[in-house]
Length: 108
Image (cartoon, rainbow, N blue to C red; front, side):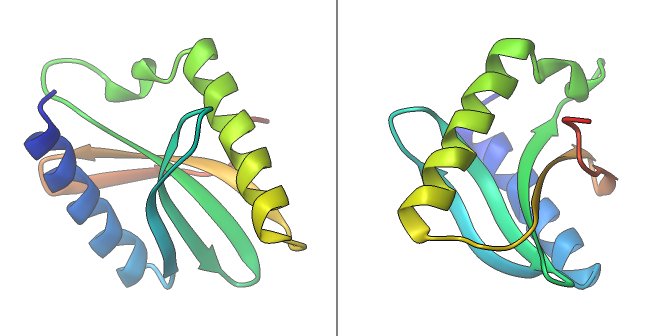
């Protein structure tokens, strides 16, 4: 997927999350461990959101065990760096065109 396609999917995801009552905290947060696409807050819970999109296949399958490990290390880094003391979870948001499927708490 090209960067432009990814940017479009992230823009759709941000609009979806905002319309679902989320406050967008940050986008494209990166460190040496990896990158978090979107960080949002809703009802006192911090949501670290990995955005996936694509055509002709299920984009959710691109979250491999290796990718999941990178995401979790990046979340740990962000929480420690920013002194976060609130509930949080890792979510996936699958974007297919203008349709979104928000899969909450994918690490359970």
